[in-house]
Image (cartoon, rainbow, N blue to C red; front, top):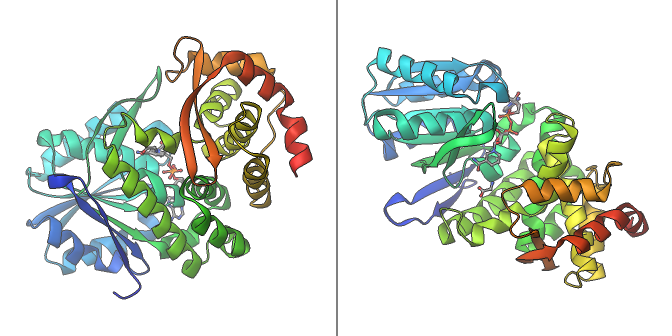
Amino acid sequence: MSDITNLEVALGSRSYHVLVGEGLLAQAGDQVRRVAPAERVTLISNDTVFELYGDAVVQALKAAGYSVDVVRVGDGERHKSLSAATNIYEKLTSFGAQRWDPVVVLGGGVIGDLGGFVAGTYMRGVPLIHVPTTLLAQVDSSIGGKTAVNLPAGKNLVGMFYQPRLVLSDIAVLASLPAKYALGGLSEVLKYGFLEGKDLLAFVEGNLADVIALRSSEMRQVVAWCCKTKARVVSEDERDEGRRAILNFGHTVGHALETLQGYGTYEHGEAVSIGMAAAAVIGLKAGLTDETTARKVVGLLSRAGLPVRLPSVPAEVIAGSILLDKKARDRQMRFVLLRKIGEPVVTSVPEDVVVGSLGQANHLIDRML
Ligand code: NAD
Ligand code: GLY
């Protein structure tokens, strides 16, 4: 157990631990039993992840004395739906699942959001354990209790805050992660570095090739660092009413680009990367971010292999899309900007400053590289 990092998300009676390390899948049974003793457990996963890691988790749960029922969902964002949730509810009732029987969710952010939503609503809430298997899910979506399904009208429109009882992040599973998802997760890792401060960023910078390759020894430290940051922010603002907004660094422009270019053109992490570079430029033009900080953001994203330049979409069009977003109020757009590395501020920026900055962004970014 010595190489396992054990962190707490402190939320009073809803507090829970996040374990980060190698070999945690094999411990899943004993760990689940500590937080949710019962006779049976339901494992929810998707086809891809179950083929890779399902047997290991089922064996570990059985070895701890659980009888195990498995629900497999198709792979992909389109399965984060109410109809997929309904299918799972029906399976749970057919298994005779009781309200004390835990649900273990094994997979990336899609299966985590869906499985978390089901666990939070079935019988008004059953014990939930996340076993995240993508870098994004390990550093972000498994912690903090946001669950959701999509509606045809938009992403994540139905959901609830429902905290897990435990998060088991086994670093070893990252070895099989396809490169594009590794890069998407890396964008979130760098986001934490910009928000958290110099130590995490210096570590990532100093070990960039190993971090990009998701080498276990480096990733164990990086994931633990990110989880610690997220755990602290969630403890301060569980329901996203204030401080938690800093986690949206890069997301204002990022979401606008995803909407304008059509979902799927950019990976979420790529759009957030461009959004972070744009936020650096907006901060610079607004007189809030200094040049050294802006260069650091743009330079590191670019060296990590992430995109930083805006696509050829007029600045006014991007601004218009931001104004339609729920974060805009009275033609003031809400941005997370950096005073310095480790000093995020959530602030309104006037429309003309945003349009002016976005119009010059690629020129300024090219000069910083
Ligand atoms: P994902 O869950 O679709 O996983 C990406 C792909 O990797 C899938 O094909 C999956 O089957 C595969 N995969 C997962 N683990 C693997 C492994 N170890 N080896 C090989 N393949 C593996 O995508 P994601 O990027 O993890 O999550 C995106 C989702 O997360 C979105 O729906 C987003 O809305 C949500 N999200 C939620 C929160 C939150 O706080 N709840 C935060 C950020 C994102
Ligand atoms: N992913 C942002 C949050 O959890 O608030």
